[in-house]
Length: 468
Image (cartoon, rainbow, N blue to C red; front, side):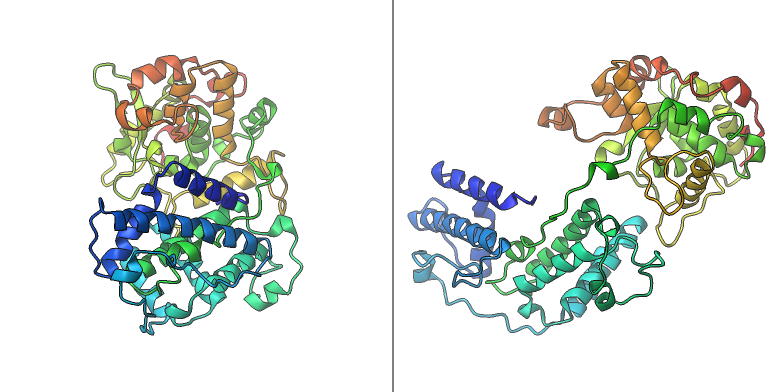
């Protein structure tokens, strides 16, 4: 929910009542009846009345939540309750409290043990510490005692914490109590996107507790989770931006972008490919040699960005085929691929990159190097300052250039792997096939010209064509 999420939720429930649309509550009602061993005919008057009663109670609960969010705790209610007029009163046994004394820490260990088997290394790196932070903030307690006040306290603490509490000299090594007593500048606090991700992780855990029948009926997951609202809005100043043409010229100038001084091939190739494809840094670093292929029938070369093996993509739309610009071929990219394929046991385009245990990603070394490099070039913020010009700015630059050239918006969207936008509709997501590589090549890639910012003639034939 956003800051006005309560208002939106109240309006939705009211509309459902007016339209007699009770589908939004039906799933929860059926789950409750199943837990109680109660069977009701969905066409019966009892079931319809009960369903509408639950919907009315949901509306009342949202109103109470909204008042409490604004500091008004004057209502006498402590939690969600079955409507007094519910037909269940005549058919259901009295609701009893769960007697299970399982501790939150025990359940958390079990949850991580079960769920982490399907989490990718990069997800584990973020999700496990987030869940352990939640345990520390609400305290290890019997699950049956977990209530909305505990969730509110967790939300409050998260909005106060600094974003680099384990790495910044100002915050590193300090306990939670010490951090809470510090006057932390807003610029140092966790970003809205980080808070949102953390809350999603915790919500999933609470929902699992409900599925495992470890929560009392009067503390259902959705009402515990509804307190986790991101109150902070992302500042426009925090959003990444495109590189200007002058900055691109500086980054690829003969004085700065000098292949002879690079220690690794990826220092040459990753920025160049990022400029011409708009791909995310991890997508480039994890490319396999087998991911560089030709479209059948046209012979057009493309990068197959996928999530096979140990690779990861940000979204489903991130799985895509990106045509390779002729400039990259002229620079010797395919020659490099051919040479590496002859090296026994070589799988990746950048075989010297290693996954970091702290992040589970291959791009760590590249990100650090590029940060130092752009600072040396005088691009973006200096050391110790937050920069909105970063490697991801190559992606912004390509998309902006395509926009200024009036290139097909929909084809650009597929090329860069954007999931949301003008054409994010049911028809597009479910029924339409993706454009062929040739179509994107002709409409977008073949029209891109970066000669105004990169001197290709100077870079051709460098020793990085074949070396790792």
